[in-house]
Amino acid sequence: MTGLFRPRNDGVDLFVRLTPKAAIDRFEGIETSADGRSQLKARVRAVPENGAANQALERLVAKALGVPRSAVSVVAGGTARLKTLRISGDPAALAKAIEALSRA
Image 1: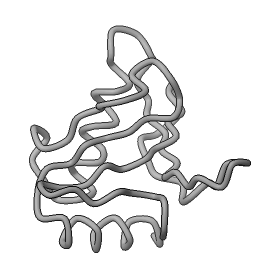
Image 2 (image 1 turned 45 degrees about the horizontal axis):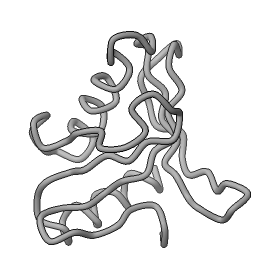
Image 3 (image 1 turned 90 degrees about the vertical axis):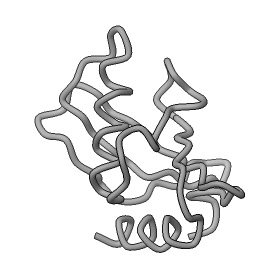
């Protein structure tokens, strides 16, 4: 799972490839780009206007990992498909939850 997330003192940074305007909000496994970086693939129904897709992604990740919505925020890639989400909490517990999520 190397490269999908980066542990921090107060949580993790999760790397996501987001596709907006999908039929359903869901995760679609792992994608490895040409440069070897891994991202969790996610789709949301929201449109990419006024931050709606980013907010939908934050809600989806928070629900899947069992953390409060306020613990998840987009910190990089706000207008790009490739995003970095900062998730606050216990890094070990979050890492375990992300690994379980990526296998589902």
